[in-house]
Length: 477
Image (tube, rainbow, N blue to C red; front, side, top):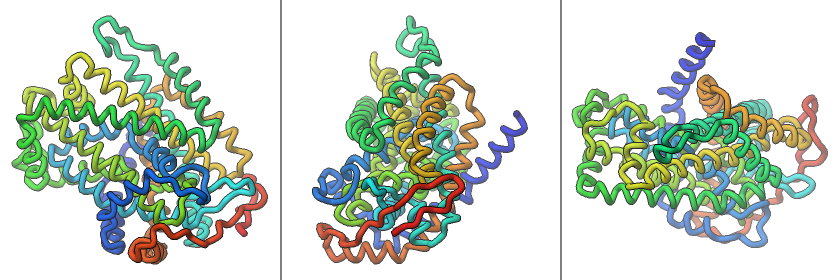
């Protein structure tokens, strides 16, 4: 098992090293240029995300679809992951992470557009969409569509289920977490509570998940952001120095701080970009599965709403985390720089009395929301592969693994999940590049010609019949 773990870890490190950085960052830049910098429409997109397109086809509101995707995207990586990138790559990693998120807006926009453009509906009117349908209907490749779904369904059990419940149970099991008298909550109790809560939500499907996420995601994000602002106010005297250090160290190895001064520009760039790419999932193909369920007048409106997910996740939350951590390092120069978890604990420990509560609540809700969001991604992937009848069994397995993840040792699962996430990227990026002409045409029709309020007259195809594991893909009419 140890040898297997080392092999899996090396494969994961390779895939999420320069090959994935080049593939995803290259796609971000290509789409940004070809779509004439859709980032400049971000505030228009934010405005649309809070509106309801009444009478439009879909299962949930645009905001509901957005919060469902954000639930899966905003996770512990936005807190501990950013701090780890800083500990490994130095303060400059924050800037590279932020720039990656800024460019990733174009890719998330493109994914959202294709999700609506190529979505289908069941005989009951339920919307189905995502990279698998763009690959099947747009690229005309069922093989790549099936590959994507296999990777997504398996990855969901890892990064979206077991590792999240494990992160929650491990955190709550710590002695002294809420004071000297706190003995920790046994992992099996946390696992049972999580399994029960997940059961209550997931068996209501996308509407139930979206309803919970519509409340939970804004609440948890605002709570966390307020905590960050309190810390920044406490570190106000070093805020200018913090920004200057982040910018300068992104381009100069000599601009490091204390124990971080040994990093190189290549290390700073790699860890910052990798964290940005992994945290916002732009290009991974997960978020458009939720986007396809949105009630929207046309593909571009939902594309704009989807693009705000990367803005909130990386451009705002990850950037705030980075600034908070670096300012805390400057204010406490004698700390250990090499442990991302300790860096975040140090930063939030500056808030008197409630600092650990703020951090713990944020980590727990971020991880729990990820379980909800990824449960929907996994369900839609397994439904594409084997039909609606298998979704119930998938939900049972999902809930069981929530408990298993809470009580088991999952070190190797993290690396397996990372590998599967990387493999999801490949067919999804193929669909984005092959169908980039379609993305441009739709953008020209609705956004560039200022016709965002125009309703699409394209009929959404209906899937007839059911699928089984050995059956061919259902005919799309």
